[in-house]
Length: 169
Image 1 (cartoon, one colour):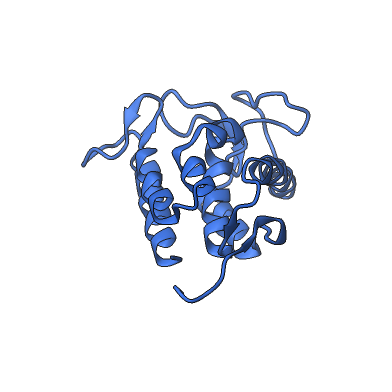
Image 2 (cartoon, rainbow, N blue to C red):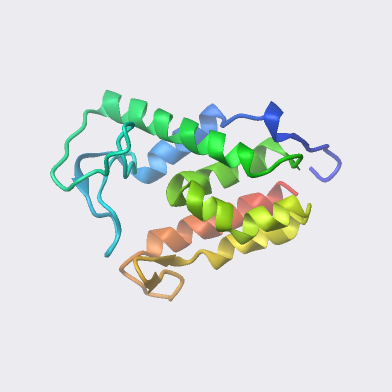
């Protein structure tokens, strides 16, 4: 892949395969739950807010079709914010999908403050990949601790993103 050219992010969009993987990894919940200790309530496919900005509350319910609609609205909003933070940056489609998956999970505010964004703006693509591993906490817990039963899935997902990002270089 090293010989491929990156393209401006204005020419990229979240792929169907990325959206499908996100829906699979987020696991559908009909009734709002707290996915990891001290986290926000989520419903559907990991949504923490409704389209109108109201936070999801424990007990909120959603159908599968409505959950896909909400996830689509969520990722569209995150994608708009994501693009605005990376003027002039070029990426491979795989990189774009990886960072959009991260932005879906952590949100636009976390993305704006992230070391990944800073490294991408500086065109340090490999270092940006390595920065994914810095995000190993959830609800105050270090998810990278071996044997962790609180948020091990958070760390697994970060390692998967990191490996995919390096493979895209």
